[in-house]
Length: 305
Image 1 (cartoon, rainbow, N blue to C red):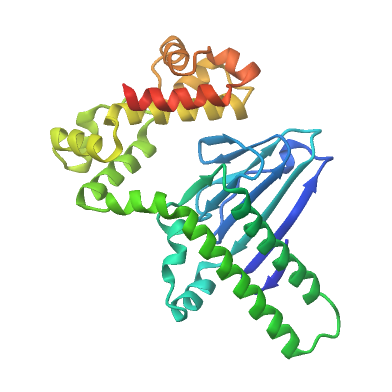
Image 2 (image 1 turned 90 degrees about the horizontal axis):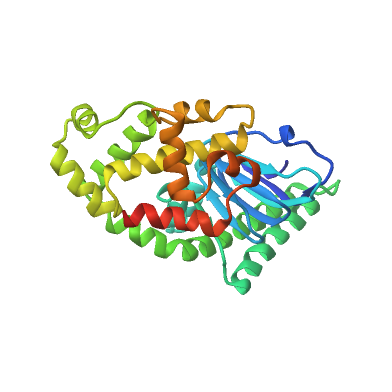
């Protein structure tokens, strides 16, 4: 990855054809990241979440979660990635009096934008292309200090313009976050965090309320108010997401291994739950995967229980 200016890096329409899946690995970093998927057959992993990418998908990440692509071997994989340091860009945005431009990274953490208006996507793509051209321009030898400084200024301006567009795309998602930004939301965030760290174990409502020092009945009510689902439904969702990840990414593990590592008491209990939500047995899913529509049904079922 080539450095444009200090603390800003770009891959523009990089294509891999002859690669092995092990060439790509999960990683985390301190930089904010904007990922554009152009073409190929690729799953993207963020912690235990596995997303089958579609052309022109954009993922905005704060970089702290384990993440990375898992492209299918033998099919050309093309993407653009830009990373930049929060510490570098924050003073610039503060001077411009627009610190809110980083809220998609701070508030949404990791989010997928799909079915973006084609004109808006082209704006984003055009900005990345301009940054790429400035990158090439900056590598021309014998540029004096003033010319190099001007290139850095242009690149920074283009990045800010890109952040404005992403902020606009994020507004509806951010509005939902801000509406829930109350004491209740703070409690719910703690509940979710606790479950995310303990879902592999035999967890009850009493365990959660006792560890977080919150009334079980109050906890149940505010969780449903904020998220639309119950605490135990979220726990099941977390376990199923983990099992889905293990089935896809660790074919060497047995169904029992997957069940136990995901927090299920037995392979039979796991298989019943998995089939209920995905309409397919775990072994079948491992062999052929799940259609995107079935994944949507799974999420819908969780909210309708």
